[in-house]
Length: 416
Length: 150
Image (cartoon, rainbow over all chains, first blue to last red):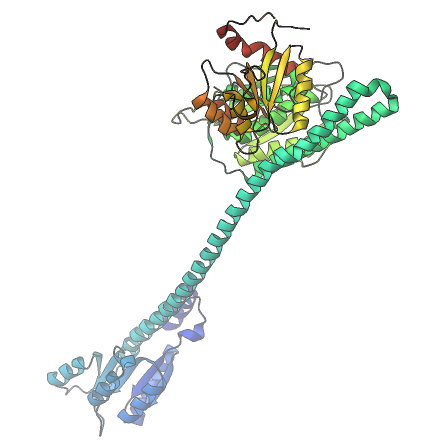
């Protein structure tokens, strides 16, 4: 009973198939009755039992199978148990196989010593007590089963390690390829941002020269065509710029550092100076809190938000942008608030999607990439962003970034 | 129309004739009397500053009051030229304004670290140039004793 209750628990513990865990037991005895009796007792263990009626047969069986334990009668004609054991032990495979000698009470101590020299692990005295026989054999059966499990696990582990080493090699190779590809992309992107945009600047520039110097010789329609040419070139230029920026935001390697917002915002505003930002009134609150951010990503993020804040304004209204920070737990919320046309609540999420231009916003020039850049940049800094807005009430965009922990010394990124 | 008694000497380092054309136009519109000389790459710019090569005639190629510098140039790029000027430039230094095609802040920081006075993205607008020409050549004009009536 105890055995059967133990079995399932063991099977649960060892995932490999149960058939693998059945081991062989060799019973060697010249008396068929004893063989049968022992077999009957041990069959309860649920293992495979192999019988041999003499030493020769035992040796033959030992060639065919591997045994977890050998139960060896000492007293046999021709070749006794000790001789059989000595021969079995000669095979490397059986050097350590447990042998239990079955012997009468008359065994002298000398005989026993002989048994131990031959590597006997135990003795059983006749008449055999079934519980004792079962218990002793079971110890070795369990040992063998555990050894087998460990062996198969070790093999699995070796295989696993080998595969992992292989995978690591593949990953390393891919990684170095990726690095190459990335630096190529970097070079491409740099070239593209200069060379791809130069001709567009030219188209736009000459269209304006034509308008200024020769515009009076053209009729309204001709001037309209030139304006369209200029608009298209500018749009292409903006698209190129934004797509390159988006690509870089997505692949830039990010290490966060403490960033002071004032110098960064001033740099961004001065670089944005050519567009609508130039005419805008931008108020930076004096006590902006520093944030954990990444210089380039923050610049991309803020320049797009400020650009939007100054762009989507009703005709005749001077854009007014207020930038402030607000402590929220362990985060700083950066607010960019404008007096623009506002955004319907239905679009508050949609506007952050790539190439999404919605509602009234479509009437304004833009690429539909700016807020996608913002969202991606913020995500990459581990932050969040969103908007509070209603048509006619301006927009309040927010960006949440981690506060600078007191231990982190502030790096001063003030422009020289 | 703002005028100065003597024109401001500008050295434009720019390899693109189109961009040079747009620059001249914008400078004209800025209202300042200027004289713009163009060097097509960094090496030519060095020659100009040293009055060497095609620029040996010091009267025809006077020392610039201000330099406008493109970053992406053949032979010797804008950064290298800035570096060279830092090592070889006369004192007081001629102010250098960088004109770049893209507003990458790394470029800006690098240029400023190398001594650039200002970083502008192309195309430079006439009002930007007016602001720049009002501010930067002053030191040199004062140092050389030239009158600057604005």
